[in-house]
Amino acid sequence: VTSLMYEGFLQTFTWINLLACLAGTVLGMVFGALPGLTATMGIALLVPLTFGMPADSALIMLTAIYGAAVFGGSIPAILLHTPGTPAGAATCIDGYQLTLKGQGGQALGISAVCSATGGMVSAFALLLIAPPLAQLSLMFGPAEYVWVAIFGLTIIASLSRGSMLKGLISGGLGLLIGTIGVDYFTGETRFTFGFSGLFDGVAIVPALIGLFSLSQALILAEERWHPQNRAILRFSWRECIPSLREYTRLLPLTLRSSGIGAFVGILPGAGGDIASWIAYSEARRYSKKRDQFGTGIVEGVAAPDPPTTP
Amino acid sequence: MTARRAQQGDLAAGVALLVLGACVVYASYDFREDGWLLPTVLSCLIGAGAVVLVVRSALGLHEEGPGDGGQATPQVSALSLERLRLPAILLLLTIAYAFAIPRVGFYVSSAVYMPVVLGLLGLRRWWIYLVTIVGFLAFIHLVFERTFLIPLPHATWP
Image 1: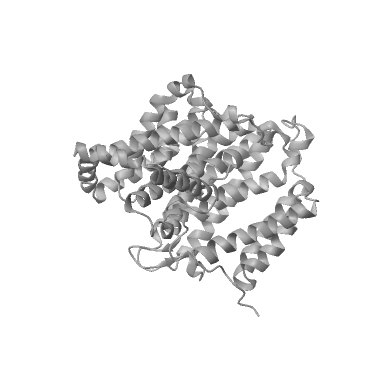
Image 2: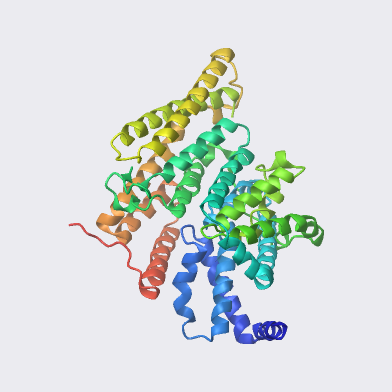
């Protein structure tokens, strides 16, 4: 097995594979940065490009597309408060606040480095402990999923800043939106008002676009009444490269978030979007600066980004 | 944002949530079997939260009195019609755009919607209009309809 891994490792560094990786990264970032196009959609749309390629190059390209698309989703999340992918929603909270403070470049750099670290950790996790993790995921039945759902709802308590009541009402509204569409148990169509597009419920991407993009567009439209909300989008490339000291400081947080991402990623039905919220919530819970989360701190960007690339 | 303005917002949100909860309970009434149960329970819980929100904010406003708490700058405290005009127009335009796409097609509706929005947002240079609109539509056409053969909505009317 080791020799095969070594051979595969060497094969990765051929010029055609590096080129495929580069092309996949660029295409993935473009797809991820466009709100409404998810990483999975990016792969689905770009699969035809790989038909004429060798299998190893095609796999490298598809992996690069996925990883880069998920990171690409953080770019508009940080700069425009509009997540490019569902997984980038948690990054909006502190990322955009950093941009308002003029530290958008720093937030982008932290996001890129932490995403890359999370991607590598997840890749090694997949390589080394995939079989036991797969067995663990097979042990998950309905009861376990109920507890995962309840655990997800408890995140409301951690994320509700200022007013728990408003957090709980918001959570209730989210659950209520989840009842739109065909009821799985009775087959009843609920709150569709005759629109066939609502039979499957409200998909996460349109919901996020409505919640973040549309509201942000309206906020930007009345920007002259809120000069303090004007984003500072000018920054140099130098600001985008985090210092080694900062990276080292954030490494434990990044590794913890990566672990959360690897665990949540193996659960069928759960993905990077859920993992990023859990990682953000856990980072806030165990942080000494928990009161500053949401006001624009780099930990709020470093926490949700790594698990989005499992 | 002043405390008074936040409480006014909470009051308005609480009333809106109560109305929403009542509408959902009413709409759930006709659902067969147990399809009504979850929406009704959720609506009742949201309604209960909304009542607490309304009472809390009403008590807060009552304690402050009519003239307290308005110390913010006039720029941000005044919820004037002028301030709401542009976001409201944009929202209405976006709703109209969403309804127009299936009827007159993606390209026509986008070609109308984009310049109107850009104009409302204060763009005055004609070449930016041209580059943005033509570039965006050409990009969408090339990527989706030509490369990936994904048909975009075309006109169904007349």
